[in-house]
Length: 278
Image 1 (cartoon, rainbow, N blue to C red):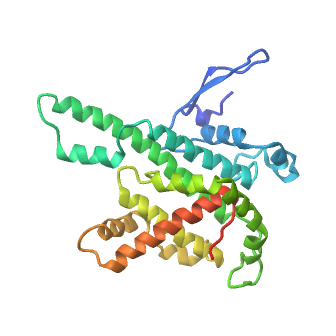
Image 2 (image 1 turned 90 degrees about the vertical axis):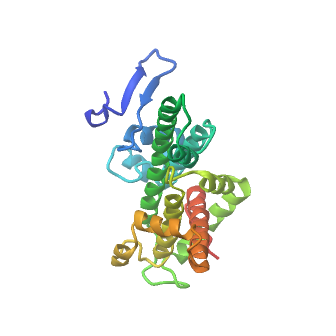
Image 3 (image 1 turned 30 degrees about the horizontal axis):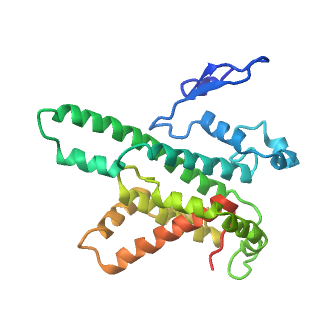
C-alpha cells in the first residue's frame, strides 16, 4: 500500500496485480507540496537504466527513502530533468503566460462579464503557479544534488578543488553537447517561469544558481559564506529594479550575465553532471 504520509498525494486508479497489463495512478501536486515524493519516485523509475541497476552502490541504496539520490546521481538528474520537461509541455497547453495573466488581472475586465473573466483567469493562473512551483522545487533539488557530489581533491588544482572531477567528467559533457541533450535543457531553462508570474524571481533564481555553482567550484558551497547570500526574494527585488528605467547599466548587466550563466551551467549539470566554465 501507499505510505500514509503520501496518501493525500497518491491514489491508485487501477491497482497493479499479477494479471494487470496496465496500471494507473493519480498524483496530486500542490502549491505547498510542489514536488511530492510519489511523483519523484515515478520519475526515477522511468529514468533508471540497466547500467544504473547493475551498479552495486546504486542497488544497495534502493531501499532508502532518505537519500538525496537513492538510485544514483545520474538517475536523479535524469529524473529531475524529465520533470522539467513535463512542466514545459503542460505550460505550453496554455494560450498565454502566467505573467500575462497577472497583467490582465491588474488591468481588470470590462462588463458585462468582468466577474466571470476574472474568475477564469484566476483559476488558470493558479494552475500555472502550481506548475511553476514544481519547476522551482526541481531546480532547488538539482542544486542539492550538486552540493552532495563527491570527488573533490584535498587541495585546489588549477584554482578549484573540483578541477580533476571536471577534467575526468568532460567526455560526458561533450557527448551531451553533441547529442543535443544539453541544448534542449538550456532552451527549456530559457523559457520555464520558475518564479511563476514573477519574471524577476525567475531571473533571481538563475542568478543565485550561478553564484552557488562558482562557490561550489572552490569548495565554499556549504560554508559560512552562503549565509551572506541574499535570499531569493531580496534578489528578486533587485532583479525587478534592474528591469526598471531607474537602474544603472551595471546592475542590468549583472543580472543579464549571471542569469544567463545560471541557465547555461544548470543545463550542463542536468545533461551531464559536470560543467565547462572556460
